[in-house]
Length: 134
Image (tube, rainbow, N blue to C red; front, top):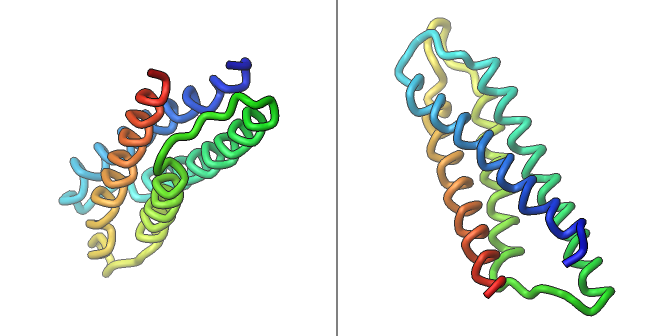
């Protein structure tokens, strides 16, 4: 595989690491009234942008490998990546919901579940990518 074929999995690992930190913070702090919402919103936006970058680089690598006749066909990888993009976008949207003063918005309680769903699908995509190597 050419050198650029390794950029996508490495970026996916970085994305997964940031997603784990974001989801863990959201799960542990969701009951606190002093939730670090601004920091969590920034992490969620960066996670979403990394997901978009992963999608774009994955598409680039797929097209580049097909052009040199070394394409890798991973069943279900594209629909799962679209699901990750939608889920990460929804996780960003719920961070902008406003609650009453001194309280978190009820929608913010969905943030951790959306982040965990996106991470589970990213892990599934990694597993499918690993299976394609064998």
